[in-house]
Image (tube, rainbow, N blue to C red):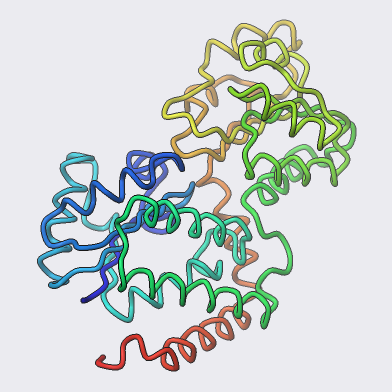
Length: 336
């Protein structure tokens, strides 16, 4: 059985294309089952994060299976999906790519900590759905072991290691400092938690947390010594805050131009900094056209992340050497 990985990420496709393929955590198993129905695919795991969607498959024929999978993706996205948006990895290259992803060296934020858990959840969802067997089980279990070794033997996790922390860096650059700032976090997931912690460490005075699940909003607010806001009431808080970080799992935008226009006068036209780190995007792009509003989406964070990546090239080389050595010793692809 051969291994194929077909995907798109922050390096190959803009956010407006990536969001077409975003899969919520609750639907990962269901999507893996759909992929297994594509001709030529025997096993599958679907990984979907704010920066990538990837399909891992165990197949008899790499060429035939990848052609069918490309057709599946094209049918889903239509003409907006172009060949250059996709990348394909086969056999040992697919295994190497998965290890790079798990280790955090293929991430927009080098060494990011969230991706390890995201890949585990994707694998567990596929396992629960019955879409994995010997080939992918062996591959993913080995990749988790290699990823752990890379993170413990290198300094890849030094510095900013989450999309949220880079977003806060951007806010600080624009405002000069975040001391005494008032912040609203929309969404109560792990991304929101790490972002909120970064904001507090930079001197944010108060944090409001809102989420469709009031219980989760209250839990996160208590943890951060902040204030929970009912999801239906977040617009009322918008007139008070300086920064909004949005990271929900909603399939559509939760904030549009009318929400901000309605509170501009009450805000006395003070600058409003919006960071949308959700995929699909939470905030409609038109909001950024308002004069005093500064809107940045996930792709805007690339510049800061690339600066950090350039400074740690030696660490990347060390990580890659560990991955290559471990794959050779694993014997997974001795026939290559």
